[in-house]
Image 1 (cartoon, rainbow, N blue to C red):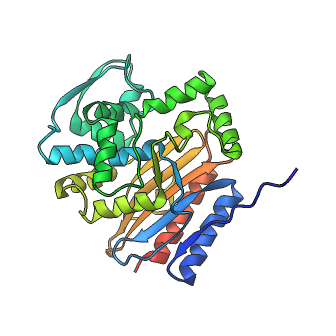
Image 2: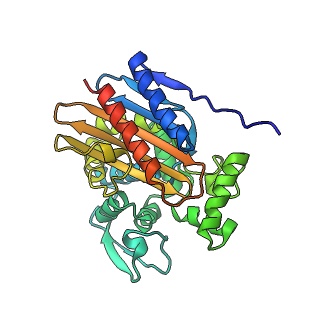
Image 3: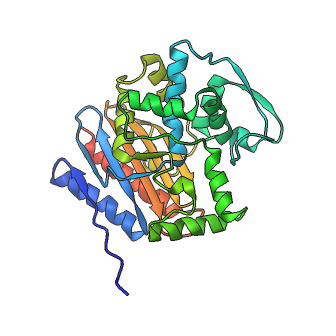
Length: 311
């Protein structure tokens, strides 16, 4: 039986020192059985480092960032009222462990606060309530009109869980086992892990989106400013932000987690003026719901990249 070929990352780096950092991050990930892509870019100088930056991957909850931008664009255009009340009923809403998705009784929340719940605690029910107002096809079409062809939006959040349940019933451990097995085999029992059907993106496309948002080169300034503000409320800090905690730094980000996928994108801003956008998209070769060592490796990589790229 022939051995599985060794993956050799394709590196992006402006010079030898940045290449050393990219190689160190890739080596740390490989030692933990993690495949994926990583990109860090100084938003002012354009210098960057990373590996496999054009490899596409299912986005999980990272897709909530482009969804939020399209909703905020409609608000800025006067087409949607942020104070509009929306009732979310647990009997019909999306599942999830946080926010309205974890509620047992109907709740009425304004559109603007659905955005906050979606980005701060990754509330799936809030996200799908927003998809009711701005459909999947519209989000995808708006992204393409803005030139963000590297990001595809194809389904609502709850569809991930519907597809997992279709493959594994209510056994989430089996769904995780199937995801890991299929990754090795190059096939996808769970449809929303298949690149042909998933919400999809690459590290380069996501960093490009962050750069456009942070430089007001997409949508409208009112929309991009509000997205930056809302991403600053994210409560999950165990990944990229874990090694970027300091009084002189501000992190705005969004995680994404589903089965063996652990992602995060965001921007770290320093009091000195340095701004570095990061995207880390990972898939693990293990059947574990919790992987703090992978989260920590993502954080260490983010710190190394930020220190290498800051002016």
